[in-house]
Image 1 (tube, rainbow, N blue to C red):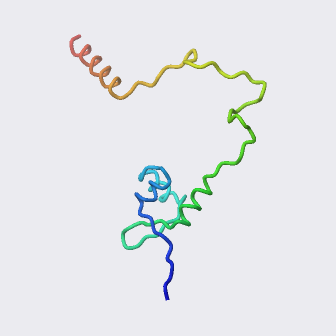
Image 2 (image 1 turned 60 degrees about the horizontal axis):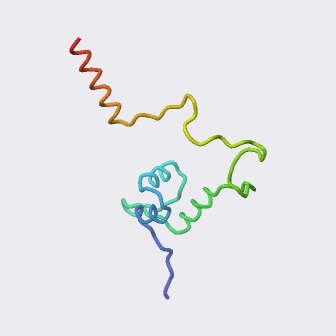
Length: 108
């Protein structure tokens, strides 16, 4: 007798199917957001686990055709940088700034 077994996905395969990183999938598994199988030391996902996870992440329909939020008569914010906002510096810029500050303190 031939039995059709459900397809098993490895963690990298399931992450690729869900279009997420393996680390995100592992975090979701650890937090109990997605079911899984452990066979030996390896983690596997069945198709039903992936489908249940996707269904649990489905957002409700908003009823808005345009996809915008807010009321219909509300004026949209102007594009660009708003007054009082600044960009977050990246790590390299912060590192260079700290080095320059330390150089000035050492000279003085």
